[in-house]
Length: 491
Image (cartoon, rainbow, N blue to C red; front, top):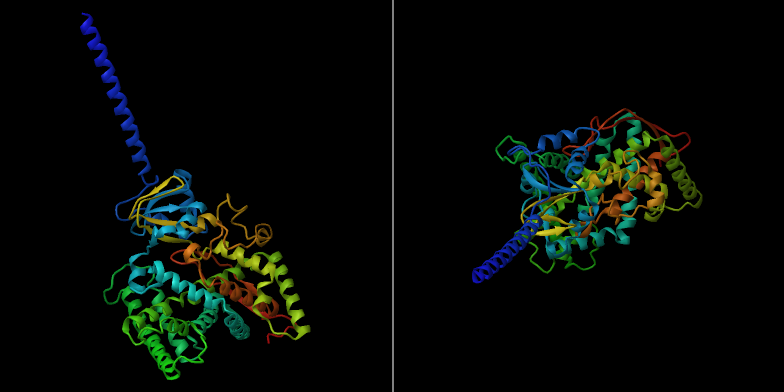
């Protein structure tokens, strides 16, 4: 009996030990499984996902409500299914920062099929690694060069003054449409060196047709929106290629000696000078880059300028303060007889605060799409290889956690926080490796426009609403009635 007793004891210990090992291994698997789970959320209906809810929120005064609702249910990082793609959305500024910094090239750009079709194989948006870093560094260096700063300041001043004079003759102006003419002209001059005339009119007309296809069904049948936009791009490429070929001939004639880099075409040709300039892939690469660089002139800049006018129209106290600040600068310049320079405009502190607040509230770039190249974990959130991530800027900009009374236009808030572009909670120009190289130029253009508008004009804006989908715009293009200020000369 004693023998069987010890056998039973030994067997019990063995079973207990096995059970312990089993439970330990099971707990380990649970932890691994939990770690490997994508964030909580809802993928919605088959194929449609939650796209209808996402789009409908874009037509309301609070487009961020789509994100806010899911953030309250699932946390700051959640999964959803929008615009045909299952996606992980981040409304956390710290997670967004990691995605934007993209150390180790974990994330690559990811965009809807219609965007990829339109921009093609040589798109800046699809560039990664060394090629993207090189182009980014070249563009940033050129846009910050003292020569360009001096030249572009005068070009913007001339364009803005001419536009303001013509608007007063019209009396009633659709502001967003009229501003596009100014910003597009300025940007085409920077990118291609083309001034007013038939070429500029052609580029403007075809580029508008091209841009209509950015958000559409990816169907290329004749008559479809994408087909028409691709045809417009063909016509744009033909013209841009002709201009580049003429520039190449001129460079060969002078063997590149004594030629100053006046625009982005010169910059890209110089950078690729050691290669065979007439090689087709190189021409296609430069042409594609040039066309994409026109986008801010047609979309982002005119929208920012229009919304700045709207917000100032709705806030008389801010309008009075920005007018006083700019009037003081104008008086100083009149007394000294000095020309304006880049630094003069950028030193207008309250004007810069107005610009920062406009960029925060307008959310023209409401986020960026990326795709994970490999499994990655950020702040306890697991993102599997192949999943898309939307780093939502609008959610951060309009969050009570980051800004007091976020839906109130309050330029004075920047007196405390500062207009630091590198702030994780303020990313209107993106961040990390893909921080917009033209951010200083954008602020300059906004500053010049606001300075000459408030010092030479008075206006009354009609009631209008902001629409946030598919792109940010005014529903009625912000109609305004504009008059000349008493005793103030436009010139």
